[in-house]
Length: 466
Image (cartoon, rainbow, N blue to C red; front, side, top):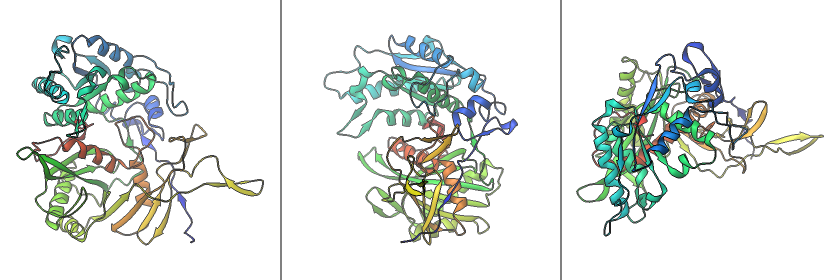
């Protein structure tokens, strides 16, 4: 079988300090060299951190805050990780831990009681503390919750599917509290402090309302929507029977606005855990998504609206989407399939002989395999500092499959946008993700929303779910 010639999209650039038009493909290098995108547009003089922590461990949090203001050299991922020169130098802000008497310490001697499941005891204690801290939301910007390993018996429960991380995020989100969970193993005792400081500082900056970077190479008249679904628990029957529709709306530069979530009344079909909406429900979901975009843009509509989801679009969903979107907006419906059986090997010439390269295909390689299907490598080789860099380190990367259910034209613009959106996850310090942020965030929302028994029909800011 012979395919059309492949093409390679250059690594997308990110924009940093907004007033100086500075760009870099490397998020950490860009932050160090130019400072965050919003550092002058919306300066954050300090990030006030409140805490919920085990009794007697406040000094551990004090030490962590001091580390954020220090210099750290990378001990891992040395081909990628930049030296951390302190949160003040990089983010132009300070992190301040509010006084011990204004935070909440939890007693450890009677946390777990006989006859009570550990996850119940721990989650009830933490949720009570969160509700108390929510009453004082004006006193801090981010609520840190420290989980030591000696509480690990209450972190999850295999019988019920309980997960403490998702429970905490759902509880804080319902209170409009931006939270940061600190696990002892990954935040306090992790060997590479440089890595910890980068991840923690980016997360705190975003949760305090900052924008670290934006995409610089996408048509500004485009908007992106990521669709996902979650099956939620009915508190009356203790059964999972609410299907919640989630829609995240993103600007052309990849900046997440907000998302809407509501319980769908009409599910046309269901394949496993994947529901497919009726025409009326899809119309409702798309209308709310477009309304969310317009509310953030003074009523202006995008010229192009691209919808991503991981499952195929049924005829009812396609019809419902077109019902909701005015005819003067170019609507594209794209399914993005993560798991494919395709592989690609990069061959080079050595002394006139073709042989496999030591590095994989370049990230951004794509080629069409059908009338409405294209393969795109979102993982692969990237040239950093004039050297080849493969983030995954080994294995042969597989592409994602993009299948179009509505829309027309060439593939370059769609592939360029998707590749750019893989760089817009502000919840870590990596160069890119495998999936675009439209779907990466969708997965995070779905797992958290399962724990929200009282879903309020209103827009939510994603920073509450990070």
